[in-house]
Image (cartoon, rainbow, N blue to C red):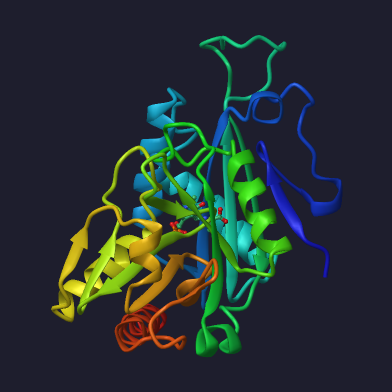
Length: 285
Ligand code: PDD
């Protein structure tokens, strides 16, 4: 079956899908994206993704390219045409194409691109054994709350992890504190309390982060939204990371430090179990 992409108003074969060379997303990374989990053919936590999309676009002064309802019907169509039961939907909105100039013209028409593909949830082996992360300086810009397609710092960080045989790089600010992973939020567990960096310009407001905070509240697990250092993470009882594609994934090594017992911890396991329950409820709803 050939894949279909949505590009600026048209459904086209994926391998022939293209944008203009002067699309500002291509030349300036002047655009916003979202990655939404597709579960049982439906989009999980869609309202939160729309809220974040609208906010990110607003922060860089791009208008919503169409209403939520219209975007949702394109998403439905992209998921349907690609026969994605379980996987991800990628949505990108750029400021559109115009002769290259750093400043933009207010009449630029945003360009919307969507793709969908099948993808399995995180491997059972990774969930059972936990994954390793390395740390590296956070070299990104100062507005990481905006889900911009400018991902060079993230890309370089992820490749560093790949080369080191690790799953992820946790990026570290100038004060030695973890901001987040290159495509995931970072968490530790200390004395029964879960700790994650508070929202702010240094990190993305992860949709999975928000869902895990809901789960923690429901389970009455105490949460401290505060920064933590690499040393504190290495000495923590448990660590994990979250994202739309990774769910809740235990972290058992940070650089050359073993986290806790070296095995996924009980609080991480409870959070994952209950996050999965949310997914099951969604599938049945
Ligand atoms: N990444 N932090 C960063 C820098 C991210 O890129 C992501 C998501 C997250 C987790 O956010 P969420 O829970 O909404 O997926 C945190 C997506 C999956 C990606 O770029 O592919």
